[in-house]
Length: 192
Image (cartoon, rainbow, N blue to C red; front, top):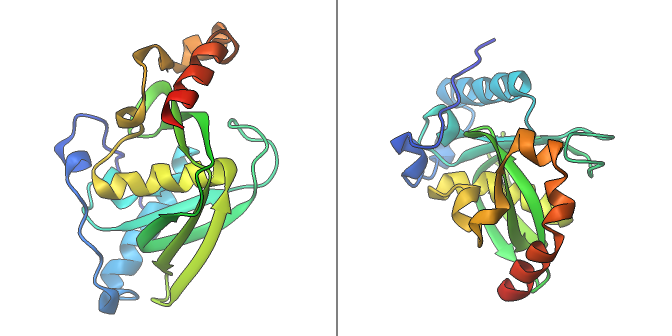
């Protein structure tokens, strides 16, 4: 088991666009080791997604794993542990919704981000086979958040109003979600 260090905002690797992973190298020992490191690191972190740039690997490989049932983000749609290589997102309609996001590379903060809510994803799986899936709602937000890491973006880049970026302990202690509801609605309207 290899748990890698998750690099944090400010590290230059998080601001470099990741290179596509060579499809012909999927399944190689180096690829398998990278995937195992991502899986071990995600499991140790308690997160629901992790991208290779977050462990200082500049390639387009990411994991998403949303266990069923209650979670710190609420009741979520279950997504089994899946490896996404060279993912491409296509927005399917104009529906948008905002959610409070957190990030393993931006520890201790949450920010309100409005994103498309119905997307299609084309990618290669762990065996190198092309795959296609469509996701909606918060699950779509999770995928966009993780895949942003592959494009040198962090969720904080999408925050429209700095009043919607808060420390997590303050978010929980002061019911920030409810207290900023009108501001969230205003930001969502501006984006739509």
